[in-house]
Length: 318
Image (cartoon, rainbow, N blue to C red; front, side):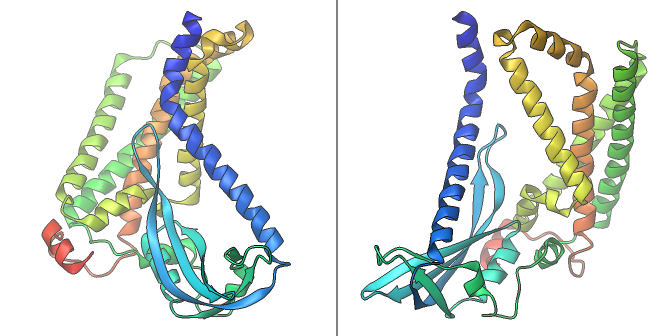
């Protein structure tokens, strides 16, 4: 019982994340069932009068993170009294969500109403097609819509150097992981760990410097939350996969005392390689951040003389 209590204490921080995941999946399944039934419901004319785009947050061990932006089309119809319904779609970036939703303002649409409940209606994807000439933007198009201040040259140079160091650290860590798996326990020279630590420290420092120098820019603060979208597909996949793998390993370690002996033995064989795996994840995450910064500069407009201050952002509504 003591081991079980200790295990539950370790797993408690994951409870909100697990509950949020289950609730989201349940809502998605329920929505699919309603949409499937709506194809056979009577059709009525409606008007979209309210459009919004709201940031969606998800809980994690590191605090709230941006999961996307929810574009909502609110429409009204009579059946026979005035009724209201909503259509929602999630976008990775704010400007794409706002741009897509705005085009439907004051548009007439066809909705399907539940014959057993006049207040229940569904606006199908097919019923939105052809209403406007603008399709759902691709990721590249969404990236080009984002409004970001152009970094100063010194910050771009610093981020470029950090990207190179991060890639070098990733190559070093991947080599160390491969050799560790192949040859088992290896006595690594101490200078290797000092070098890796210095590389990590440099990249962390450069990230803090850039964040400090752009602290007055709300748009750059929003960029940090969704910066992974600016990375190449393989890098996004690598960061997400390695993060999930480390989370699974941490979960198994947290409940290892309750697992069968063979599983504990397998976990013990993995532990010696965990340092290299964590290093790979760390350098890949740092490379992703600085790659995102550099790529974002390719999608934005002319250079500006200085970063906008918080007061300037408030006055302009950024």
